[in-house]
Image 1 (cartoon, helix red, strand yellow):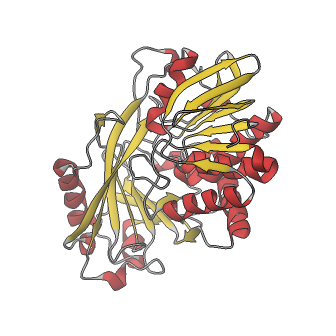
Image 2 (cartoon, helix red, strand yellow):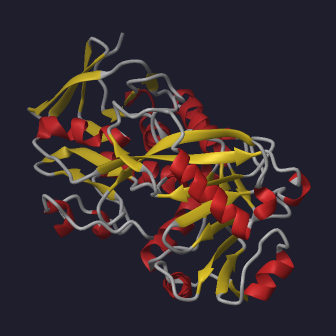
Image 3 (cartoon, helix red, strand yellow):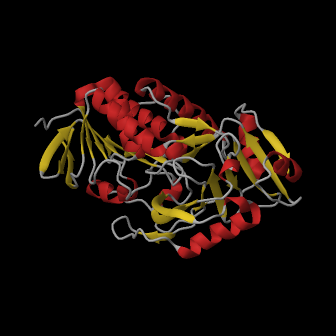
Length: 388
């Protein structure tokens, strides 16, 4: 089997499968992707029916990046011949005095030229009688928001990367990474592969992948979960009748109309317990589930019904919740991307950016907020802020 490539992608989840795809569009058979588990596994961060995609974000930079994310997904849809994004509209709502001010989002959309609507409590309940709120609640509605089809998107990236000539291998855990003499050598599944450039998209295993380079980041890995409910009011939660939604306060909750299962889905953002990628369990956190059901009972009561199932995943959290997209310090031949627990909507775009950095050594996107050596990432015990 071929062991010499131009580009190796380490980890084939959301970011990695996208990087392999975008690299393969330009470099074809010169691309190798390595996954330690089976393709489409559920041990990481990006394998479920749905993730939120939206233009509503807390900085103008993220809003601009989100515009490009929609375009990247549309490009993949055309190439793959299948739908990967479903627009439902999106509602951000919460108290007028909250831990996540809506003004941050409206100001950012204003700066980026994105249209949206301001809604008071009465208008929220008029449009969506499924929601119950008091006069102290207000919201923002943005019509482009919706569902990024996570499992389908990952599978499309994998399928199309192979069609463009890439070699993607699963069940090949990495045992060594060595850099030197203008190349990277990666031993995985008992075979050593060599390449000119390495792209690290290892999610919760990022620090293990960085260790051979003498780099460690102050990351926290948490076990998060979402729950699907068999509502007896399914007709009220179809994607044409109910939007994706985010409750903008601490704790922060979010939810989806029915997609992929027979009932809607809801969860708490960044509310999980700290774990490690290798020792986490898949058992539901009952306290977290209680927080979600209590919120739904107060504000979206018709969501509730028998639990279809609760699905766990991991967040790999930087202390400021911003991404890392940068070269590994001292090793320009290696690039890393970490999504901070809100990256899937950007997955195809991040894959495209990683391909540009690997092939061209540059990208037109402003990556300055995502530097690997930004001050907060150099602290041994940095302050953490996860409300974004």
